[in-house]
Image 1: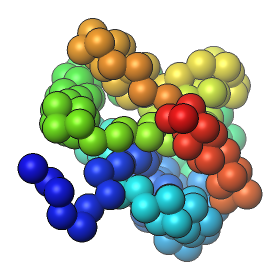
Image 2: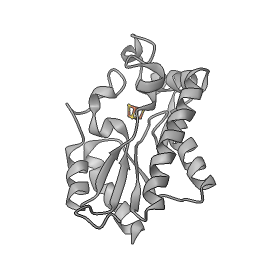
Image 3: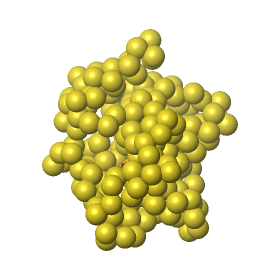
Length: 181
Ligand code: SF4
């Protein structure tokens, strides 16, 4: 089964790395996508699965406050973190995690190589190495990535994760190829 033209290898990518239009107001760093990341992944013949944008899905494009861009990024990110932790956003976030886990498990069940998950550092939701809390950038995962890795661990899966902040960080995704051996 699936012995056709496909590579049988996939990478899960934070939504805004492919669509900067989804990111919170004032934080886009390029017009559309992290082009270099996409090029590296395509060269590795990895299918790119775009993760949902938790903040867009749970709080809206304006994150529930049209003045967000007027605050320092980590201050606004901390507000977003609080809003995402409260009902009904938290329930929506958990549903997105489940939706993502279902996709991961399908690829896993059919023996596809899941190279990894690429997050967006400093994000209160998609950060991997750093996130935002207490009005600062701090080490640790964002709410979505934290919940996702916990759920995957419950399924017995440990999938490598890396976080990017700027397009120049693109070479970091090659770390996933090394961890996949
Ligand atoms: S980092 Fe995550 S929550 Fe923030 S814009 Fe990107 S995909 Fe959405």
